[in-house]
Image (cartoon, rainbow, N blue to C red):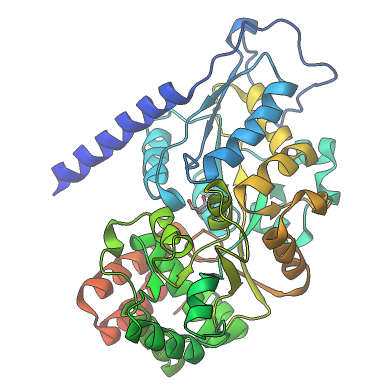
Length: 442
Ligand code: GAL
């Protein structure tokens, strides 16, 4: 088993190297320093030889709408910094499941990329900050005036001991129910707003021979689970799960897990072998009625040339009307970055209005910055902006906000066993234990 895991990790590393090599797009030899740019530096890094200006940026945005968003931001970077070679070290796999394993082994081997994608919240603070793997960016925030344009609520989620550790590029919404408007209309079904309405709709669809729910690989099941916990427990109950105020062993959580178990019965049977894109696509192609996925799915639908309100509709996941379950992708500066000056240049673009306005409309997210031009965004994202500004906001589990990596991984193991065996009580006990060993429960 150990040998298998090692071999697998080796494969990931090789894959990442190959992907990096393929994705790198060398530019011409540097000529002039970019006009007016004096990279702010939080530390005193070694000077880079003029001929070797590069930046290696690591993410998991390799396709399905995500790569296109990243490319749009890289374009802004290349226009601003024509002399810095951009090395796109993205590793494929939704939600970073593969990428984060590759990143972990690179960090352990002392071979960090200059900058990488990390989620605001516990993922950032509990892993990279706790492991001294990234540097504070306070000087950069000061120089770029970012404290005035980044949402106030986000700053504590990227800070520790008064230091700010990342540059948020976006806000994504996790609790979105995507649906096929034609299927619902043909079956005379209204968009469900409660979990019971959703079950009733899916019973009807099942009887009509339609696949009610499109589902993918394991992390998409955790994503579904977090929205069902929220939809069943409400804002206070859901938040309490992460602070220790809500008992994981309570009857309320049991109801949520039963709801989740029931939901799985409406899903396609080949979920384990589908990526999130495969699953979301079932809805826009008319092969399934509903899919729960973050709003990166909208970036994908647009890339596929699909039309909002015709090929796909959206609503908050049942039970979560008026609640915005969020996550934020951000970029960090590696401690011991091989090219710290260039990494700062990248972070400047990631935090800029121009960079975020190029990236987000394509990625299917709204800007982290509060001053982006709303008219650049499509109908769905404009509605997300309104909700972000007016809804109750809670954090995502699957995408790093509310639980640290060790807690999340215990939940993931319990979920995997549950999906295999279907034992709700066993699942609940494992979740109680996970909160005790890695979370705030005593
Ligand atoms: C999330 C990430 C999103 C999107 C999604 C699917 O974790 O924050 O930007 O990439 O995974 O891959």
